[in-house]
Length: 248
Ligand SMILES: Nc1ncnc2c1ncn2[C@@H]1O[C@H](COP(=O)(O)OP(=O)(O)OP(=O)(O)O)[C@@H](O)[C@H]1O
Image (tube, rainbow, N blue to C red; front, side, top):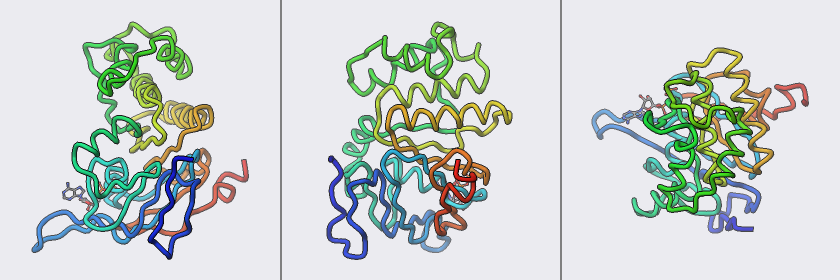
């Protein structure tokens, strides 16, 4: 098991089954005169192989938490472990390497390259990470997200939901252990949103990945293993999926 123990933290339970652990994470933006506290003493464990949601209103700190956990931003205080690696101490170069190799990012805007086809967009992150490109596998992933017939299409010929499917395929292609998704269904109609969430839930199972997803949608529990609630930068007790989804 690649996950190291969270040693030195006597209060924490050592766990080899957690993909993400935040310990006492604070994040303050702004200067000393006008600080904005985005995260306040957040401690959170996300089990390996789970689909975990972070729910909260606008400004609650969801994006900040995801950005810190994905190594895109640094906490002001506290420690973050992802896939057994302590992030908070890493250099910029080490963080960038970590992101390319271990983390998948799925954000509101898909960030697809408009001049590249669907298949080329899925191959791109592999090339950027210096990885061997297995076109057959990329095609298989695109088939799994329902785009087998659109491999050669350019992004502007797709619907919003299809573009988000390409972004999911991109996130899956590099085989990250952990995927961070920030409002991945924003702007989609209810049917499109349901399809994307079903797809993400299925991908977590098929590829045995860990997904931490931020949303304002309190109904997310129907898709996830657990839901954490974030309000004004503070986390409240997780809600077991059984109590929100009727055990299904
Ligand atoms: N780069 C930044 N500089 C200053 N303040 C920031 C910055 N990023 C976030 N904040 C502030 O931190 C707080 C949390 O913002 P964050 O975007 O993490 O919340 P959120 O729950 O993701 O909300 P939303 O869904 O609206 O993005 C807010 O008060 C926000 O204004």
